[in-house]
Image (spheres, rainbow over the protein chains, first blue to last red):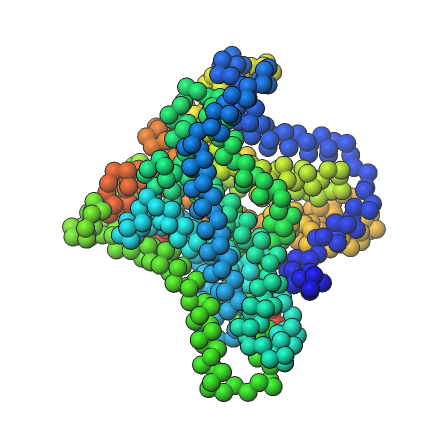
Length: 295
Length: 339
């Protein structure tokens, strides 16, 4: 089974290539290292400012805004972790993220299977419909979308966030998954049909398990996008207890603008899940992008 | 707009319809053994409807339908309650096109589009080339470079607006290294603010470009570099003559994503400069104009008209770009499919 799964991956090239390259570490100009780590410093610096700032006191921050913590103040983090509002908003974010991911994966795998393995007249039109959706992020649709959600009576509810997010994540999902499902060898389908499986049986028994690697990629992308999303919750949610973390960070930052250290602690705690997910699955996501770029 | 420059990554498919049409028969034609009867045909269509239907319904209801409704609402003066009745024709559009605030926002968007390409493109190519070499700790460096892209716009906005205050960390740091002359009012000085915005945008999105280019670089066969080395080409000659041309498709797709993302920029500006300051600081965009004069002012008819203008501008630019720049890649994909 695992051998087949590897075969079905659209971008299997990078992994062996990396191994081959790793064997002969070429001699590289030390300057390359200097530039590379300088760049890392620039990328990490502001994030470090946020995380370390949460460990300082406000007077330290005022005296020397760009300094390191002189004493380690865990109180800011502790007070955020003890506030029920933080956990409430983290739970809202988690519910939205998980529900969006599940919805996108289920609808996306089914639609991609149709697009990849059925031969029907409207197939190119259906593909174009979803591909066109890529060109237009939520910004364009947000005003009428807000009215639609209001008319559906979903204002200030998490369902009002989840449904549009599923819809807007579908194009990406389908574009990644279709080449993935096409790569499943035809022989497998023939073998399944000889063994008496219908096309639907083939879908549930073979395609669903084989598409797990691609599903992980689209799932992570959908989850992180949902976790970070700002514009839609800004329009739909108006009660602090329903806020997701991005809105929570913003309202916390304006409410406690004097207490910079606590704002920084709140901010750094709210970015942890997205960071963990991404660093765990970085290779897979880059692999997914590679497959899509090769298209 | 957390998804703006990101997952759209996959807009990559330059030729949705064409490619699938070309490649399809080979892949999905049913085995010749199975005779097509009316029964299996009916069954096939039921399966297609069952599997594809839900996605299409959700997508049309929450993506296509709102955009269509925006075109309708845009002709009304409407506060968002009840059905719109006060039909005003093109009045909203005339107001938008004559409003100097909108012109300014449009100019800012244009500036951001151009500067994003100019600042991020070359930097990302150089960095990707650098990181494509076999250096120690390469995978760790890659993960760390990706961090700004993963952190949400709200966190980036909150963090940077604290750091860029006049008494913030950036000015403090400049003072420490003896450059106190460079310390300025990063956020409210109209001459500086848009450059601060570009700094933040570059910081946040350059990692994404690097990762995309690295992915493109890895698909270039190593044999080409070896052959060039045998022919006596230097490292930089190889990069210029072999790598860059072969990276072309990836570069063009990245530029497309960057342009669309820049046109729709909302989150960062709205978070850092808030509702009212963005116009005076010279960082307003079409999207912040839309939210400010539409939803926040309670003029939903007007807000929808702005959305339509934003949509049309993006659509025209996207189609033009696809027609003239991505066409080469599309042709490549098509011929490849026919082989």
